[in-house]
Every structure is written in structure tokens, then in C-alpha cells.
Image (cartoon, rainbow, N blue to C red; front, top):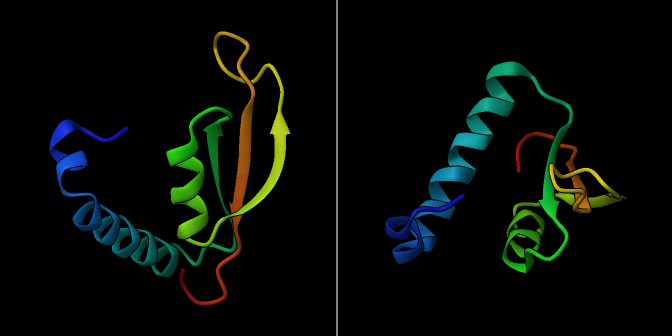
Length: 80
């Protein structure tokens, strides 16, 4: 979730998130990361694919109110 301040400066937020993600991948030697995005949340889908995540599957009835979520996975070679 992005705050109103974050929505005001989306490029800055994206740069910081990617930088932090690269750090976590290196620090912990991660081979796989996942992100679950509610199906109707188009901005979320664009964002995770921009960061290099690949759509993996639809998870029906996954949300707390029975919503469908889409699972994305990132398989970093070195970092995203």
C-alpha cells in the first residue's frame, strides 16, 4: 500500500523499493521472491512486472473475503 505522500512521488518510491529489494536479495542470497496482487488491482500488476516479476498463477478464494489474487515470482540471477 502506498500512502498519499508516496502517490505524490511514485518514481522516488519505486527507486527506493527496487534498491531495497536488491539489497535484501544480496544480503540473504535469495533465489525466489513472490508477490501476491489482488486481481482487479491493475497498478499493482504493472508495478510488479516492471520490477521483473513474472505472472505465475491465479489463486482463487485467496483473499480474506474470497478474492482472487495473482501470484508473481521473481527469480533473480544477480538482482532485479
